[in-house]
Image (cartoon, rainbow, N blue to C red):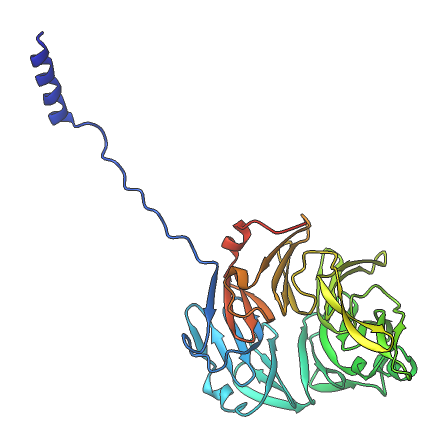
Length: 376
């Protein structure tokens, strides 16, 4: 067979049977962004200062600024119904929460509002509300105020203050100040109620209680700073957030994080690089102190547990601590945050939301989890 004829036969076979399956188109998907931010300029928000959030059964994310309430369901942020917003108009909002059964709780500078099944709105004068906690086990609403703790159960209010409860301790204990009355955080654990105050931590077990406070410095009569020894390894006395994971209480303060196991009375401390007030010949100066962990900031405003990770809202950005692997990550201006002074956290539909003094961040957890960590 001649060479020319062989080529002819080959071309005929190709024309009849083709040369294999056509090449498949390779679709290159665009990388998902890590951050999305909601602001006045790109959403219905009328205020960029996000102070509190509440995830209602993963169906609605309720968002509070100092002057209004918003909600996010499957799409964009929307304004709260007029039946609610009109009645709280003019109030200075402080926090929002709920009972996951349809009722929403709203704290203000003067009142607690209870929006029953999103129909009837009732209020109770409380003074400033700092935090709200729904105790499912006890079917009790707990409201932290600047003057102790209020409980609402079976249509009755009970006020625990400096005259009838554990809060009276500050009158007898010279190591505690009046900020001990300011309830900043609440969480329950079986029979125990943990209460974070402006001057220490309270563990309540029925009528019994135990108080924890950190070593701290206070000015003496000669204007020198006096070291007040603590009775625990609490990181600081302003207890802004408490979460429970793996039989430990993770306690976020104005001076770092303490992890406490009440089973064996064991404490762990996590701090960032920070300034501490020192006394040098009667003059108060800020002294730089090295932290013992990659925590991004020492002032903790809020914390949240998702799986085995602790998400920490600080005034210097977001820290993420993998409790199992003991590894850290961070999000701040280096990762695209416009403002890193975070105030509140919430998980909603598989994403993390972080409220700052300038905008609401939507954080893609899948993208975040694939990023390498920084430390330890």
